[in-house]
Image (cartoon, rainbow, N blue to C red; front, side):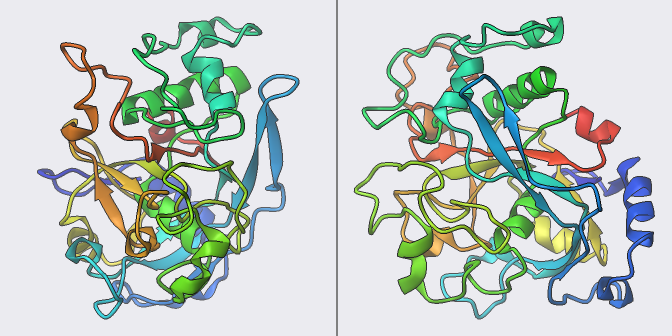
Length: 335
């Protein structure tokens, strides 16, 4: 990937060579776009051997993955989008390689196989070697329902460590999406404020948010999916991505022409980036381009000294979903 941290220049990684080869094999309109010119989305054809599948974790627990095409899109929101924040611009062209993405958020059923040490079927020492969280000091559902509902309140570190465990258990490399991958998948070919258009009256069909959630999360996948088959990209729970939150990120991307797989490499604990909005949020925070940075206040109720590296006890709105790159690289393995 091309990486960015808040204090360092852009630097290409080994991923760039692999992506360039993949891009060269495609004959999409994206290749004729002038460097640096924002344009509409251009999704490339899926590789022939890339199909939806289900990852079984036990006889009764598993999750579904949806293939997301590679392509080029204009990341961010235009200056005239209602409720737009300054950190959503300038709009800039980004190229993304294909990947699979969880159809829904990671549920408690899946997450607790790792976090609560319920995985009794581990056959690989690599699975047992992955660290697990210390026991939580309270019920982390905070009185909300459990089965089939999104796991919440984890730190980005916890979400990334879950991905390590999941990779060791399944033999497939899973990780969090980058912020750019997340927005590409959320938009699903759209250029509007939401994946379904600009009419907030339609949100009730696609999202759990302030107006319909009764201040709690709901079963994953219970609202309409976007055009690429992903549920809950707007609302229900907000979702971790890999990036450090950097307000100037988009301006620096725009300087590079077409940014290939951009990532703000994390260098400090706060703020890290969260996308999608939640059941607590009003419509403007559910837009495809809306961004949020994490905060130490998300641990205020944690009685431990020092604060836990595993739990954000005040972030009842926060969960995550996983991706699996189509072509895994050394950069992916490190995440």
